[in-house]
Length: 167
Image 1: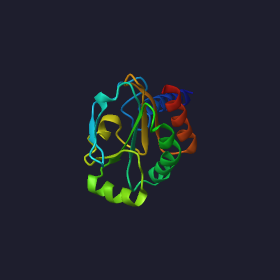
Image 2: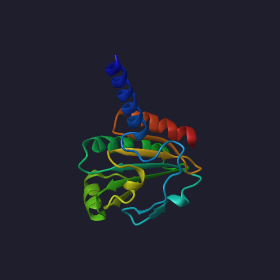
Image 3: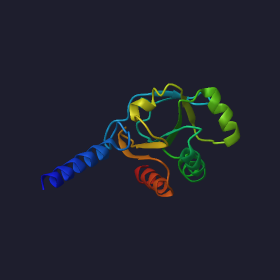
Image 4: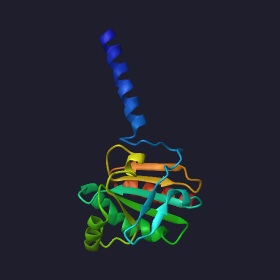
């Protein structure tokens, strides 16, 4: 009997820790977005401190990541055109990629949304410890209102709905 109770307690603790970790996330809903500055491939500097008043999508990816390469074309086709001319900012950050690597890669892909390198994971490490693709939506006050990891159509639909509701 005691072994059964101990097993259930251990299982509960493990599930609680996993849920609070949100698959490697260092942030939770309601947290203020960490301070960071990136320079996009076209030379534009974007600082998180200057994004208040806008709805922001921060996307982390890698060029070798299969789910990322499924997600980004969908973002380009369905999300970016819908919101790019509104009170919205998107930053797609290449985790552990240099500017030169991303320029060469994007010449083949043709994405038009802002892309920035994070060669040493300095920005990524403020948001998460592992797993990509990873997305954070930040509201106009600078707080995280949604996050997701991995790629499924359902998740993309949730991102679009969350952005739309908060514009």
